[in-house]
Amino acid sequence: MKVLVINSGSSSLKYQVLEIDSEKCLIKGLVERIGEDESDIEQTNGEKEYQVVAKIKDHEEALKEALKLITDSDFGCLKDLSEIDAVGHRVVHGGEKFFSSVLINEDVIKAIEENSDLAPLHNPPNLMGIKASQKVLPKVPQVAVFDTSFHHTMPEKAYMYGLPYELYQKHKIRRYGFHGTSHRYVSKKASQMLGENIKNLKIITAHLGNGASLAAIDKGKVVDTSMGFTPLEGLMMGTRSGDVDPGIIIFLLRNGYSIDEVDNLLNKKSGVLGLSEISNDMRDIRKGIENGDKKAKLAYDVYVYKLAKYIGSYVTILKGLDVLVFTAGVGENDHDVRKDVCDYLEIFGVKIDEEKNNGLNRKEGIISTEDSKVKVLVVKTDEELMIARDTKKIIEKRRI
Ligand code: ADP
Image 1 (cartoon, rainbow, N blue to C red):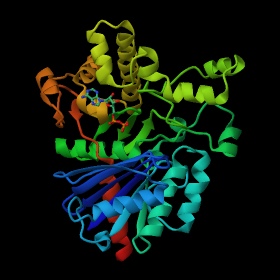
Image 2 (image 1 turned 45 degrees about the vertical axis):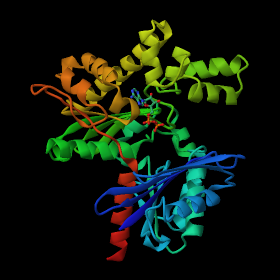
Image 3 (image 1 turned 180 degrees about the horizontal axis):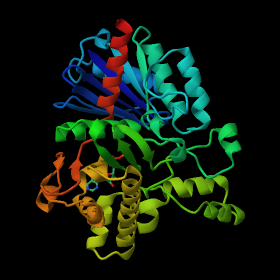
Image 4 (image 1 turned 60 degrees about the vertical axis):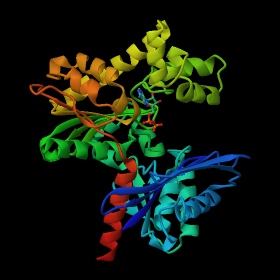
């Protein structure tokens, strides 16, 4: 079975074709700057890279272009579009409606639309991808996989804010959590790598990309996660502040900042970038530290400190910890972050084998010592594969 996976953002469309029985990615591509005069298109099938600049009007045109490249006799991986058995879409917000992945029909589209005020930056572009794909591939079944759904097992005490209950009833203001597809994938993979049943494990997964979040997973079910009503809550991230005193927002608004300015400040100008005044990228921060830059060091220290503080609190609510997993850009590549966070966690029985930690070099593996009470792993996240797996499951169920 071949599955096309689509991740559609406001001005971009990422795609992959996977042969799902062998779980092999046949091709991946990206159309960026959709709607601008010059859009960038790139694709690779592992052997040949293709790059071009063209004007792409909207998501439908972007998808048509992608499908042309997928079936290109030179750069592509398919002879004909009829080889695509199903399409899996990443959808950011499933709200309180979707607890698992679903086959897309009119009701599902309506519900995703209804959840758009919860994720105004994400759900509308996700829907554009779905609609474009329904139009261009009308006979192919489509599946939605939600970033929020893995977190639906959080108990009320974890997802409710200390706000008037009325806000939950009126506006659905509660914690939802994001990056769920990644947390689900890496927690499962980690338990497989350890040869353990996930039902016997207390796991903390640290997805540390540009956006960053933690999940506390007990017996395979999320009991807490660090992102909340929006992806702004929780850890300090590349450009997002993470947790701050909400009084700061009131202060800024009272002192002449507009709503859009505060939004931009908290989402795009804060975090590692805001504190370091250098970059949101950990590689630049590392260089800054090596050059003696004090703000780079401060940004790094706050990043690691907050991460350790959150992990510590999750060990408490899990009442113990068996497995700690690092994933995404920083988690997979930055051995210093892993080491420095784990140093804070010694009290819980976390011991890193420095040789293993330093030697991974873009690979996955176990980085804790033999006698570490907690197994620490680096796992490469693969949200597309998870989306394709879910899509396959749903399509096969439909066929029975
Ligand atoms: P996104 O959240 O956008 O999907 P990624 O998971 O790819 O992003 O993470 C991107 C971030 O990963 C970069 O901003 C950078 O901070 C970090 N990163 C990537 N490669 C490295 C590396 N070799 N060393 C340290 N940090 C890295």
